[in-house]
Length: 412
Image (cartoon, rainbow, N blue to C red; front, side, top):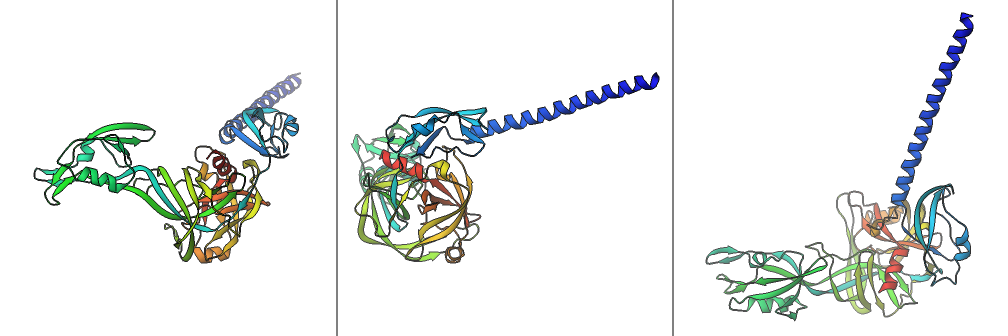
């Protein structure tokens, strides 16, 4: 009798233990599930573009809520309005709602040749503040007025200014008069009163600031869009070298360039292509944006070939190739895409890639300045453009989605 009661007691304990284990496992599963949903909601994009009849989800476990997209997406849907679709885990658990836009597959002529960049600013950039030695000691009139490095001088006494020579001529050659300076700082316009001071050493009035109105550099042509007559290049914005602020573009020119040498990259140091500009104009630059520079081309490179543009979700981790000019000829080099991000806050770093081509590594040591804009090809599609080197590991770098560049190109 006692033995029988003891048996029932042991069975009850086992049942309680089993329930506790089940609750623990269920809790772990729920925690992992919710963590995955929160993570996926954060990393997946809010806006999705699908090309042609390709309505594939981001992975086999994350799917659109309905198959109605298959009928919605067609090559005739270029002007279709976005539709709202739910992304679901295993087609059951909702993750987030996204806006899906269908577009017909678009091809561009992909290049990869190096070219020269000449930019002239819309206004004049203040690149530095300088003290002026006066009879009463050192003064910084620009700083005293409230002007800062990175500000863009738009007008002086109501008159628009475009060159550093104009600014210097107005401010330095005066008798200590006050000037109404209109500047642009970020997205806001401000007005300040600037009073230059007399420099006994230089024998003239000085405003105490350094200004710049132009810059030049090199990059790589990514694509030509025959439908719009425009080109896309570089993959990232051009910043002022001193202030690191975006160069406000007034006008610019793309010119032919020739590679004359390569300074190799090494750990901690980014190398660069050495080039010389020619007098041949390739086109007019009309926009300097976060995901590249864009302009109207005069002619398409004879080496350019047509490729369809991949949507962001068509880009996969794994083998790809990159077109670049590092020794005078456009060559295709092996790379590996190691990471993909859909973040819209850092568009020029959506793709992480690694150079695997031994010939390129031998020539350059990895990614060097001037290769920005190099087209990345995967599965017969243009998927992105090289943007930045990871300085501490120059074999690795970042790239922007080709889809993002094409969208920006169409807005110009």
